[in-house]
Amino acid sequence: MNDISTHDSGGLDKGPPESRSAGGRIAEFLLRRPESTIALVAIALAIYFTLATDVFLTTPNIRVISQYLIAPAILAAGQVMLLICGEIDLSLGNVYFMTPFLVFFGMEAGLPLPVALMVGILGAGVVGFINGSITIRFGVPSFIATLGMGFVINGLTLTISDGFPKRAPSSGVAANILGLTGFSGLMWVLIVVAVMHIVLTQTRWGVHTIATGGNRIAANEAGVPTRKIRMRNFILAACLAGFAGVLEGIRVGSFDPGAGVASGKVFEAVAAAVIGGTALLGGSGTVLGAFLGALVLAILRDGFVLQGISAFTYSMVLGAAIILAMILNSVALKARIRSQSFKT
Amino acid sequence: MTETTDPKRSIVRAESIGKRYGPVVALRDVSLRLAPGEVLGLIGDNGAGKSTLIKILTGFHQPDEGKIYINEEETVLRSVSHARELGIETVYQDLALINQLPVYLNMNLNKEKLRRPVRFLDKKAMREQATVHLADMGVRIPSVDTEVGYLSGGQRQAVAIARAVYSDARVILLDEPLAAMGAKESAIIIDLILELRQRGEVSMVMIAHNFAQILEVCDRVNLLQHGRITYDTNVDDTSIRELTDLVSAEYRGRGIRSDEPE
Image (cartoon, rainbow over all chains, first blue to last red; front, side, top):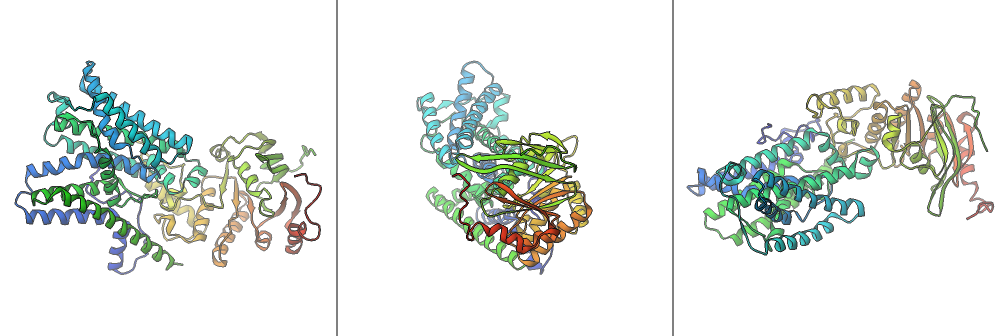
């Protein structure tokens, strides 16, 4: 498995080799690798909270951070693939809350948890497929298609659950692996991020995802199956969202219909991706960056709790972080254009 | 108008191609022949059907009428991928490159080399081959790792053409390769086309508006007007003056041609 803590994106985006001063080169590296900047931010925040509080670097607290990380990091790993190929799925938060109920009813029907999980993820995948179909077949912008689908899924979840939480499986090997024990959630986060990082940087699927979002007409003309790529990413993102929902439900011990909070889930994932350097216009972004974005948000949230700062402030900081990240992205873009026009 | 007996062997031959988009007739009864190693210039006013013809030859559009022969064999070009399999590559006006991908991945787009047994990208092989290939064709760029978005317009166009050659194309279709390019940028492309013509391994069809450039790099010129090929000549038998007169003649004095229904 790849070491996901490095900044290697497999040579997908190496800078122009002609070098200027050392400072210029470092500036260029930071410009070209938004993940490196966000990694520095994460480290700086970790150091700050370690010094400012006594308990930041303790096992229980790291477990708390890992718990904050599960949902946004896994949701973002799927969302970032969609963003890179030029789409977005706003219904992921609702799929996240719907899937545990599919698992619940599967288990009610006598299925063992792993099989019920498969059923749930299949159900999530169907939602992704419908989203993809509406977007690709009918040309409805995914922003709109998935916005509508989000409401549909929310209503569906409330209907099948009667609006009440259900008990999540609380014993057994499968439940232990699927989020119940200690760091099992974090383990899944790392697995998902590592696998998606490899998919994006080392496979044709990844290259074609970038090509589809970067210049869809050109990708089509080169024979890249852009419809298939987009469809696959819709299905993938929905399956990951469903999986994250089940992990989180098992961890907290109950499957919640999530009335009214689903949009928060999805926007947190988008925020993680954007803070990690993903452009919403398609063509650029990394799984690693999205993970680091989610990590920064988790560290901030945890650190604020430790310092007794209210959740209201966290929300303000989250908002400011998104805006700041976008400003930095657009400044970086301008700098790139300028550095380009200086050549030739 | 049947022209079935062609004495010269052709690599691509289109016969009586017709294409309409709804009520708009883009091409009518277009026949075109491309000999191995030949560079054919395609000229004509905007809307004459040049791009439509190119898109039919590249499998992007299907003709409503007519036949296409590849190596004198009747062929239905089902898709761009199918045309590529048969060695027909296109370099489009809107540049079929992905700015966010490095040069070597663009060179291999949709033809990525994969490792075995796990089918990961073989980046090392793709980089090396792209480097060798670009150097061989005299295309100069900073590095194959450079994202295409960082290259100049001429470099990008050169990479696009080199990509076509790189993928063992026997026929390259160039849709305005010199549009919106300065003298220096154009020179890069003209040199590249001349180099390829001298080697004679690929045939090319090139759409362009600059007749001086057409006469410099092409062997033969076809003029498209109102979806028809109205003039076919060797470059040695024509001049910028003649081509200019032919293209603009219909607007000078003759008015709109009354023999055209519509």
